Length: 499
Image 1 (cartoon, helix red, strand yellow):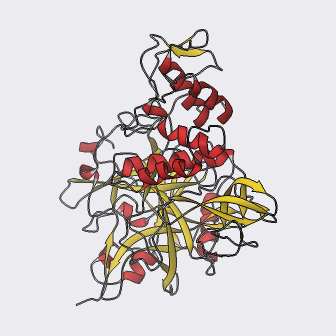
Image 2 (spheres, one colour; image 1 turned 90 degrees about the vertical axis):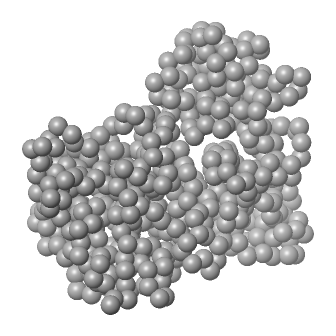
Image 3 (cartoon, one colour; image 1 turned 180 degrees about the vertical axis):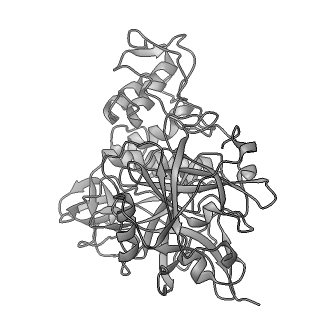
């Protein structure tokens, strides 16, 4: 009967579908150059095959002692990784990381745990064990493997390496495949890493849409880039993608240019009194305030009897088995949002009103609140961080997509933008960000996937001046016409079993 069938990105599964796994965590385990394993034989950093990238927060096998001896291989392996990643309280220092890595060599052979760091040292010019082309081939092999964990860990190493190399913009100088600067090539990103400077040209590193690095050249006049904290090696859909290409990339550390995010867990009571539990993604927009999707507060049948909502902020030091939970004290949904619109074809109203604001029971640290803005129609690229239900619990995944206006909002409704990348349940409510004025600004909220004869893509509800003004009013304690408060009414039978 209806042409549109929007499908909520959370309604295809609730918490029951969330797989349990070890959380990705990090811990400040070193005390300025004088810590080793107590038995000098157990590696603290997880093995390359582990889901984790950093040590577990509850690992306490380190003790203050003298520097590791040359025979203490794994103590030096851990120190090399600690300095490379900048694990607190150390600052990232690739020269010290390389120095400790050299202590791990046995008969000039590198340990498997440092294989990717070895390639990174070659790219940086610290190590001459093999050619630059071989270092790039090793990263290419990992990224092109059929193993997403190997791929994403390789991309994480490259992005950390980018903190140690000059970043330049090729926007005004162009990119060339040859050192003679005669064969220009079109590239998706103008942000590059400088490998060397030679005469009137620079050798640079740029990724393709899978994040695979390759050598190019640009003119010496290329300007230094200001986007220090932007991830360079990130996957994104190929040109002309239909929205079903899964380019999500696991990351273990929040980029400093992105807002603070976390899992929003809600419990809503069905008409028969049974609980419905779900995951969404929420983003901190002020020390005590979150933005997410309205549909995260409803059951698939339309019940809005909210019993409890909790926020689990992403942390490099939390454990999946015992994450930090912060209660939500107040909820305001868009007043035009109706769960029934999901099934009756009113996609414009369902997704065009799919924005909600949440007030936490306590504040969280937030140095600089993200800017709320309207989309820049001349730049299609947008980013998001989310917690999909088809991935290990509480793990964070980044998406870079192209957005295009699909339907204009009417009255109080938002414009809807279609995305050319894949999304899954649990990503609902993720803030959509766009690089404006040199920073990532929030321009919308991920809503649903729309299926019809012409579209099979996820859409997001865009912010507009009226929405931004009303959100600011809510944060200031004033009434906001676009939002209506929803009570949180714990069910007596469920009071002892909050999510």
